[in-house]
Amino acid sequence: MAVLGSSGSGPALLEFALKQPKLKAVVARCSLVDGPLTNDKLLDVIPSMSVDALIARLGGDPSDKTYYANNAAKYSLVTRGYFDGRARIDTPLLAINTHKDPVAMPEDVKNTAALSSQGKAVFFGKAGHCPDSEEASDYVINFLTQNI
Image 1 (cartoon, rainbow, N blue to C red):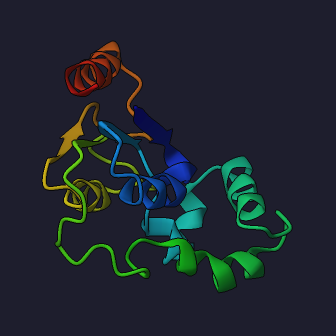
Image 2: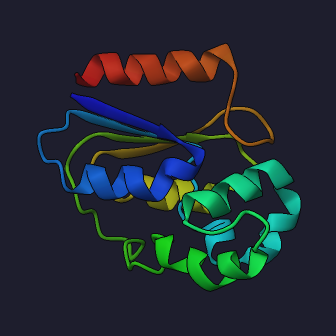
């Protein structure tokens, strides 16, 4: 059994993966794990539809940016103490994104990979949120095929 999550599912995906020792593989695709969760100034570079959806996912009214500022940080893996450089699982974990993403920054991708003793951070494409090339998709498929 494997699990794959993208973008805003990052905190939930990784909380789940860290508690499921029977998983054979984890893929965190452009996973939001800190960045805008602890720095609400980054919301200015995210499309408003995505910001509204994120606020709603956190339990707030999409028009209430104050709710976001007051509550988003508690979902960050940094705030939760996970990004201390210590591996917490041995399950193969692929953290994948573009080289420049304002939502899931390269440092966050690397820290996500470091949650596993078998973690790997890879980057495809220069910029944007989530790699959408065939090469990136093939990489994910090969990773899952090799591990499950």
